[in-house]
Image (tube, rainbow, N blue to C red; front, side):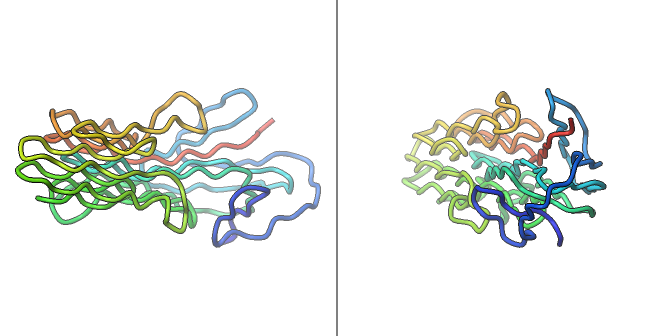
Length: 239
């Protein structure tokens, strides 16, 4: 897949080598919901789709975030990955947006852009110990059960994710978030978006309550709530 090499920052597997050839102009692309902020064009994918690059001059770069779906029922937030300074080339690239947990056996769905993957959050439908995920789910009430591990930081894509909290006999543990681990029944904090600096993604669900994670946040659901779907956001200078 002829997408994306790193200029300066952490490398991303599978991306083409960076070229220093100077070409006038700016990146042009289609896909997702397109907005502008200052000199940046931003493509937001709230469901799976295709990012199509039609013009890709050398010396022009993409920044993007990939957020996995959030776990349900004291679930962990989806893994959060930010990559900056990525070169690209013309072509069509698959974007996958992870869905929240829908059953007892699996964690939430992964989100991806090219070879970069935001892991789905740990699932709290499971009894006893919380499930591992991008961020881990909290332990179930009824005993001293462990919270799940946050797998995102040690994945091939790197990024942010933290552990869920252990439970007590009477109170379930909260799910971990991209910003911090859970503490007791309180879910971990999310991470402020590196793209817009306002939106918070990938918070963990609480071990109490029934609130669900909002769509396209990657937030975990509370003890009796569902997780939120993930999101992929891509930006580049267009003028």
